[in-house]
Image (tube, rainbow, N blue to C red; front, side, top):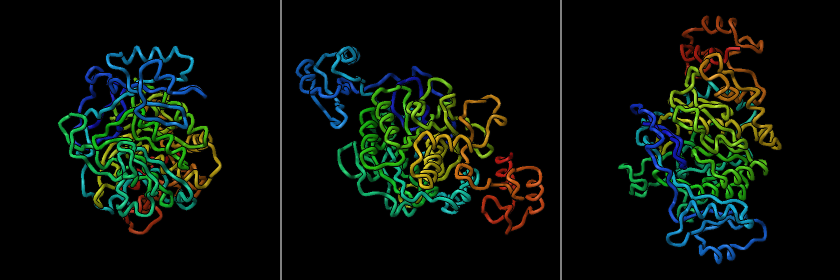
Length: 456
């Protein structure tokens, strides 16, 4: 099942498994949940939180002190919405938010195919489709730090050894323990325990394969059931900013456009950090999922092996780019590999691509990175006539973004066309040929599909 984001404003992992598809949930299936008796304030410079507490009877639960942001507990019987309105009218308050909760409506990493062979991970279609082999001739991500705001990382996984930085942080319990372990509790009361354990490691493995010389900064903001809140996500973003992140990967989202999250994202963008987020798995145009729909974020939709929109993927004019997100294999805790669908892995794939771009162009600001991705993306409109202009600028081509030859250009004329198709057909069945575009040791239908996906 897939966790399908609905109209409820809630932070949720944007991930899906492979089992039986389920219908999208209606908007009223889930309430507009927020943490009761809590609110978040960002104060104007020079304003003391003690004065706010004295006037309203609130108390501080947690703080991002450098940003003058505070999570407040409200007095008994005070209505959250009414309090937010009061703060909006208070000139000492820059912005105010409720602390929105999240849950994952349907689906889990427990529905993945486990124990996928490592060889299948290395040879999966996504790498060839995005022109990875050519891109890695130019860049492997050295000098780049990718902050992964997720459920944690299994740093002992062979795919990730030596890549995970030691200064990650766990905002669930305030510790440095960012390991990906379940707590044995059904935190979201949906009848499944620890259903999102493995999500962070799955994202990390995809990024690591694309950019093996990048470093990963694990920031744990989602519990083992995939639950979080807007304050924790904001804490994670500011932690990434303060700890030298080059890129922030947010394979999570909410239909609530939190002003606090928007401010954090804007601050990251201003510091030159590229922020990416998943567009969502509800197969919906509206409501958009944030922060993917934020103008300072690269929002990512998902496609399949044939460059068709993934059946579950959200879409819209706010989407910046698309990437493979169907039957994607990634690392999984316990030295395993697992296969899944979702705009989460699609986002991780583009994050890896951005890591290669930033390593090759260290001073490129976020808007230039977005332009490089946009200008080199493979057009999807012809193959997806019902989604023209709604899947971003196309499917990511990281090799093209780095200025290397396009995969499938077998005769080196800078286009992929009939001449290349004839060369591939003439090499059909050969075990050693430049026409083996997938690198699986044979020229076959998989190579034909890759060539067609890069057709000029």
